[in-house]
Picture 1 (cartoon, rainbow, N blue to C red):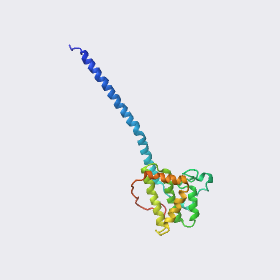
Picture 2: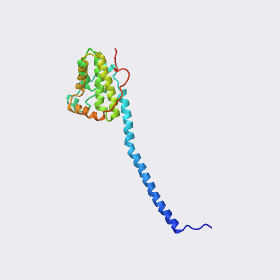
Picture 3: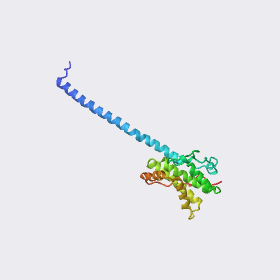
Picture 4: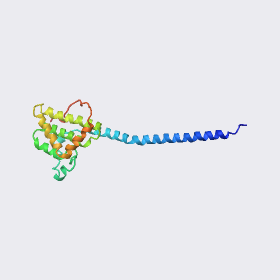
Length: 203
């Protein structure tokens, strides 16, 4: 016949179990806290991947250059009311900028295409960057747009003026200039994209 546990043994077991319960509770709380803490990071990582993919996927198409979907002049009261502005035809280029480029180059489709592409990249930079990864993607596409203007200009001395005229069209208000300056906090090293700079380069 087994001996009944001694009162001292029962008391020791209870003390051990009491401590163990607290340890388990602390571990559970820490685990739950870690999971909850990681959720925003997981969501931001997913959002970042989606936006980076969207930035690189957005390209100028021939219809944009030909003016097949050229938007009507935007409402002057709304055109500069926000950083984003108005993009009625949803091609990634602000409507007032798109119209201005068409007026500037009605008979020079190659330069029109180059400036539209650069304008699209500048608009992306202002509206879709929220961390270092999205900044890199936007700057890479901006570099392609810059390169396209350079290539269409044949690298002549006048190409900086063409780059500047697009930048002035896109960053034409204090709020847009301020937004552009704020993006410096995301600056980091990056690789230049390989391949052709121009999305559209022939007719």
